[in-house]
Length: 96
Image (tube, rainbow, N blue to C red; front, side, top):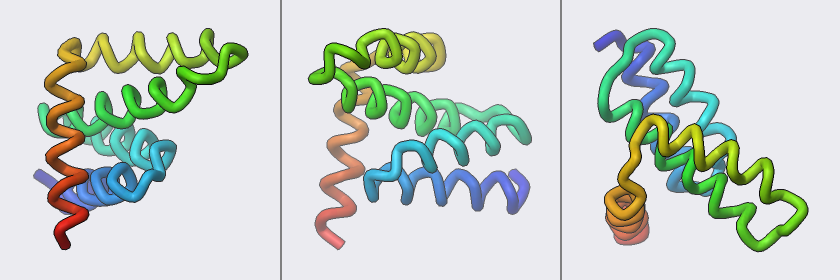
């Protein structure tokens, strides 16, 4: 794995855990353009699902929300697993 991909992967995870979902999506996509790898897809899917969830309480944003959900589902179609992984990451980060 190149240093660039590793750096983008790490910054994506940090951005996601810090609540900067847009940055996580951007960096994950950049990393996957350079090299396609499973953890990169998982991080991108987590970020896309998080973005989708952030729109659920806004009726006017349902069409946009569906686009994020569809993208995430096409990458990683196991939402329950993503939720568990995201919970675990958040727990680990809160203990530091």
